[in-house]
Image (cartoon, rainbow, N blue to C red; front, side, top):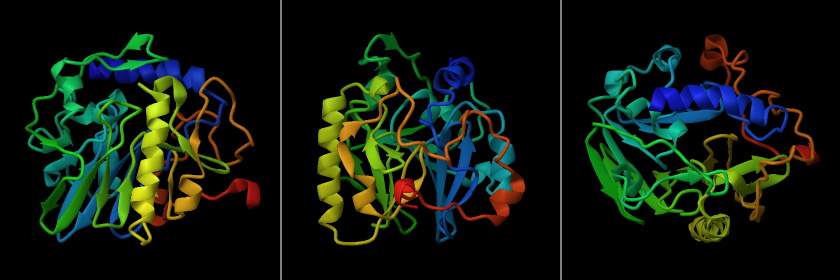
Length: 292
């Protein structure tokens, strides 16, 4: 089902979201010496490298160019033995689904215990304001189920799992080495700061906003600089910018305002994603375009 679902999204969502400035993915490249990124249409997957070990955050679409873009970053699929899944939507688990290319078939996947209920069929994932059930996800990879606040250590890499329900019932974000927060689909960056992620795709928008407020308190209490990295709209190390509109939700039914001159007209057009840029251009952080 995943290849079918991926191709369906590429065709239908490309038309539905064209010109709305909602999806603003990073291109393939590196944020810094630790974090690499691959663009898969409108979605980003990430890789964190330390002590000779690379872990993967989210598994993207069932995407035919993944092996090609891994090579742009000099990452071998066999090197990836640990994949942390924020949630089980089509654009975050495709590379570990049963009908994928099997690049990571020997990897262990990590996800929240609550989120795993979607994989077992105990709960069905609903989008479009609860009107549409997404296809079931099937994977044969070994799984490790995580609890809120659980700390995992992989060869000196510290991964803290933080439950942030709303977009899905068991959505996790991952704070790595107390410095990098991978937020999946909890935050959406507009031109003037962060919002709760897209309204039509959430299980519960009010719960999502409450979760963001709690997440902000969690991060502020740490009193440290944290790079906040989203699944569809880039990254920032400015906590105030990231959570500025935490009480509001990105409205998928309207073109976003103010206008963002950096937003692609069609997020599924990957013509600007090139090997040359991936190797030579660092991925810039999101800024307040209204003040630029």
